[in-house]
Length: 195
Image (cartoon, rainbow, N blue to C red):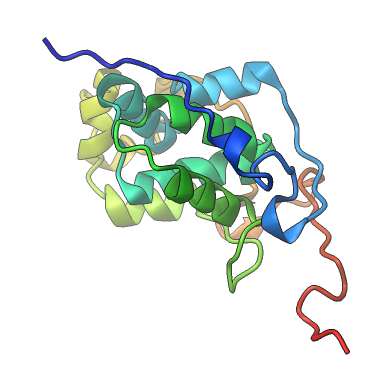
């Protein structure tokens, strides 16, 4: 009989930068540790079908596609403003294919505190849904309550689905004017050669 066993793996005890909120680049950020918001993400109750479906898949199978991992990471840290380390630790306990270097490397990358040539990387939920699940088949599989909706409405069901817990940082390609959390500052000399 197959069952998903959640284990605690102490990766953070073996890697000093994992506990650092600013990651390996020491990026100063203000992260929230709002437990209610985190629980809604963790349980797949955010009000965004693409996020919720990925999180339900993770809970049920112990797996998630790489694209799904990037999307839910971006949503947690960019839209919800939650500390990336909480997401990394949750993945650590759930993923059957867990690897410390990949997991924490991907989370620091997604949170903008790791090595990435593009700063402030953001995965737009509407764009990702239209590109990777245009007919809403994936979200309908993991969220059966959406199956009766027309395919074009499954990723954007409005009042036919649960209320969204946070607004998106970028909605329709435009940044929210009230976006105040997760403003990042980097040390001025991070890319300059020391003389």
